[in-house]
Image 1 (cartoon, rainbow, N blue to C red):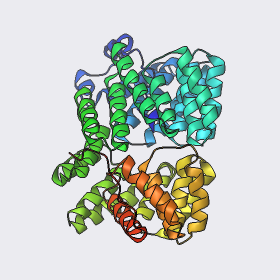
Image 2: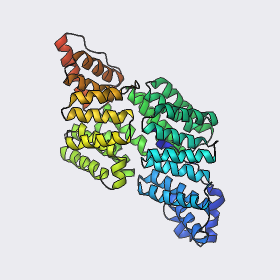
Image 3: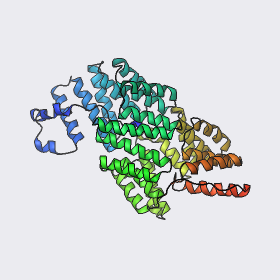
Image 4: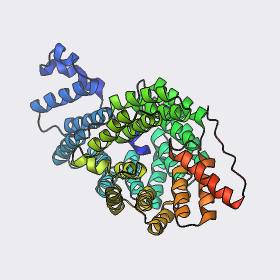
Length: 440
């Protein structure tokens, strides 16, 4: 989701780093590890000297958050929570620590708790635009779209910047306003550059702009934005995976494999492993595909937190690949209990369809479509559900919308949509569709 690209307010490193000479850290030890590793070590040593320094606990929590973002190791969020809670125990009115704690809760998908914590941060500092952003994010993830919009509007009233524009863009995309969403992302990128925001934050917005262009079938524009993101922040895993998807759509499968491998080497997310497995399957490398599919399950069930974070991804993965369909349905039902956003309804509808329950699937699919989101995957799922219950005209309508929105929406299912639509139109004698997208 869009909110994951946000940088939290950075510690004042320039004021703190020179202190390491006074704390007994050797230059050789300091030279080891990444910037975040050295930052974490520094704050840990500072707290050994002064264990009642709330500000340092706050900065340590921030460093753990950044480490989690860089490595994909979600256990750093647990460490961040401990540090931030300690900061608040010492200084209960430290608004930044309260906001950061809300971000940690949000990142662990504890959305209701994150909203409560963000509210506390806002009470401490009503001018903190980022706290309103996290509040809106937490509402958005559970389908409270009106509350999310109010929070984002307040955020942008306080500060028009990369973070506020990118959030508005995400909401507009969900509401079926892709052109306006793209405009807001362009504003976000420009604001980020003008205000000298962190390169990773700017690259995130460029990556998201690529995602939005790809969702509309615009491969050239998507490719350009992913390359821009990689230029802004080299080896950015999101941009590498996005470019891999473009290469797969262009049928440049060796390039797609290489790019997915690069992304997974940095952060092994289950959606990347699934996508790489699909490319391997497309080119007839079934054994290598199976290894990636096994990796998806391994990541999803690695620990208790992963089971929460990747519950939806696993439900989609099993349904898409006709694997463990009963488990897919159980996961999807569990997802809807926690989150009532449109994609929770969509994954449940898709799992019900795959389990031979199209009537129930249609009820949930209707909820998934209620915002008017222009997402080819949603339209495809709706079309297949209508096809199963023999509502041919509706099936044709939604399959047509899927392919006209983005003819490259899935490496396998785009072809299924095309073939199914042609069969339905052949029966009724209606003409074929004109597909958009450059495909180059």
